[in-house]
Length: 435
Ligand SMILES: Cc1ncc(COP(=O)(O)O)c(C=O)c1O
Image 1 (cartoon, rainbow, N blue to C red):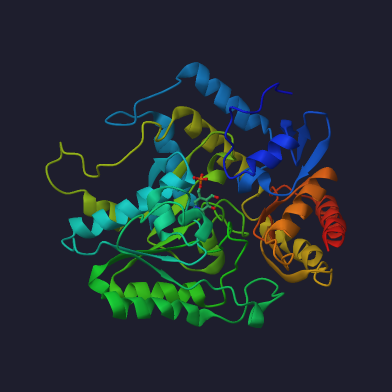
Image 2 (image 1 turned 90 degrees about the horizontal axis):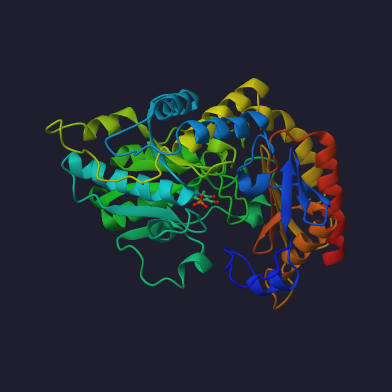
């Protein structure tokens, strides 16, 4: 145990509560973490939606070790190293047809900023520089940087931070419990929520709008599954008006919904796609933006000695991250993990929906290996009931995550039925006790 917990200001954490009763992990392997006092905790959230192949995968850790010994760093501006090209090619090969140009970043938040800038710059390069407006969605989470919180729609993440980007508007979220509560998989009602985009186009005029960004499955706000036909309708409207569609697949990427990407699960291809998390199995920070080739090619004009896109990070395509990414994709391929969520989804859904009649449960939602359980808030104390469930599960050696009064599950894709049983039984007890 560290002797002093004061200096570390923890992100997205109730710091004072934590430091009163710290929760420390010191080891991880497979489906489990171990606490500093040696307790084995089942990981119900793949670390933070990222450790898709489970913890401590030898192939990945050895690839990182080898790379660190061979070449620790290579400047990514005007220079490169072979693994960056190899990884870009492998990621593109998994992606929907046409999304075959890959720009590396170091996090989901950076991927979002990169995609938004790419969208605005793309229109400018093609002579429509007035298309600068960005459209997000209520309850959206696109990381924590200024572009991301501007297009994002989680109030607590926005309200403290001033005016943010100008020229941003939002369509409605798709949560509609009155019609869709306890839907198994995609809810049947709500494709028409996409028509909000038509309203914003009527208000602002399409000629001012660069891009629309949505998470195919909204994760951080508490797991909102897209209604049937909704993403298709967004795609049609964007196409009709020359607006780019960006899917933020930071959590849905790399097998979470049963296909490599949610775009494939739902049969809708965006123009730009943001990735991170599962790209390196969480072992080294890394993100990426996938772009349609035509978007990339639009930038490739002008004198050849000039930089085409004035953007990038010191650690873009970091050698350790590329090595981790390559080993991660090999692991996913060898073990069939990018489609395993589809195989396990039925059993997972059965378990989740068995909780529907517990006290305080007002909705259960699922797709692939993503689950959401919404609880009725304790009167006057929003978020308290779910937080109590989180602490109770942790005491019983299961890690879940909560946002608001919603419990979110996103276990590693290597999960077995016995782990699902443990997850559901533990949650069931904790939900009862929190009632
Ligand atoms: C959809 C989405 N976009 C962006 C991010 C931000 O990623 P990061 O925390 O790596 O910056 C997240 C993180 O959870 C996310 O869920």
